[in-house]
Length: 293
Image 1: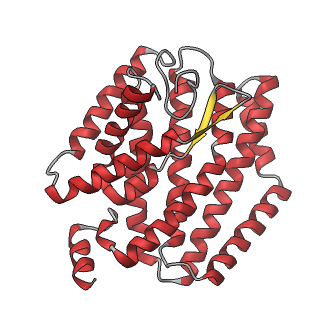
Image 2: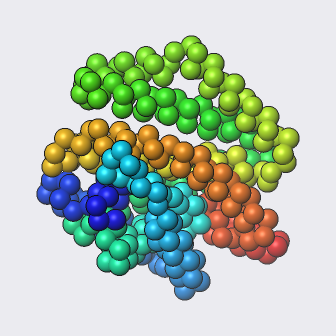
């Protein structure tokens, strides 16, 4: 949105030209690879996920303490469903957002495509890898524990870094001090309790066996997107944006949980009713799943 330039979609005038040029080059390579041998039956799926990705960014909550907003990303879900076609869907969605609503920018479409598409591709690969062991109860519990542990430590670290950087700046002292805070025994104990409780609840609620893999993949996709967005702004910013960058990271942490839960339920549902829609499946696996169904 215009006036909200520091959301996950970076606006015009924020990055230096080498980053803008590099973003277009890398995005072009990603999209070109995504367009290789697109089958006719894939087009409706790509169009559907492009629409979902487009709409998700329009439902946002402005943050009063900074020029940013919070909204769903859904690039993890997009990656799991369309697989390696994700960069194509991301580019189409970002272009529509910029043209119709001024969300993001035109010169930053390349960088924004990379920031959103790379985690989507990673999500497709990670889900395809993790779902192999999803029928093992101990493996599912481990996925939930890892999800909650990583999220809790990232939350504490980002909050501590944001707070410390306001007085010392974003220097080595702030980075190190934030790590000390995040790995305090009390923080680790709380994280372990939350993770264990979440794993126990997952086992008792009886969700689909794919839910833990979806939870971890959805949360990881959001965290990876935030890291790439922060890297672009910190290293390629036309000015020093570190305070806003950290604010964006902190306020999007709840989104990681929401998207993890959404993806967990989504993949569990699709695995039962239409398993061939999960992009993490190979073509042969998808054909066998469709035949069984």
